[in-house]
Image (cartoon, rainbow, N blue to C red):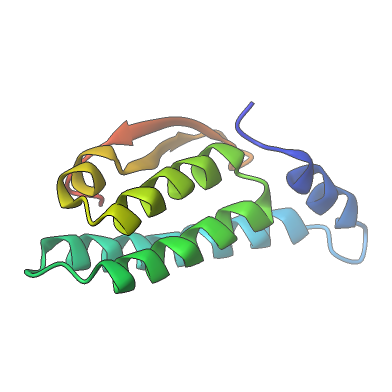
Length: 118
């Protein structure tokens, strides 16, 4: 699956006192992810590419993804960070995979490869 036990733990925190807890967390994730992806896109399109800054953004994206249990996104972020460490701009541009489809629960169903992230 696309999610790991972290998401299940989030679901377990939802109760009558916080009935929308998971929805709120996922909404925050998408909001933060949108900002980070825009920053990543801007950094990838700048010359020369600041790989340190790019890696910082991807580190944040990886952390956010991990915190909600989005293991596929977390894994893709780790690969992207390896490309940053190698200074491989082409691989960064060609291999960034972003969520493109989710279900009503916010579960990510599909990813897309794109050079224009949004």
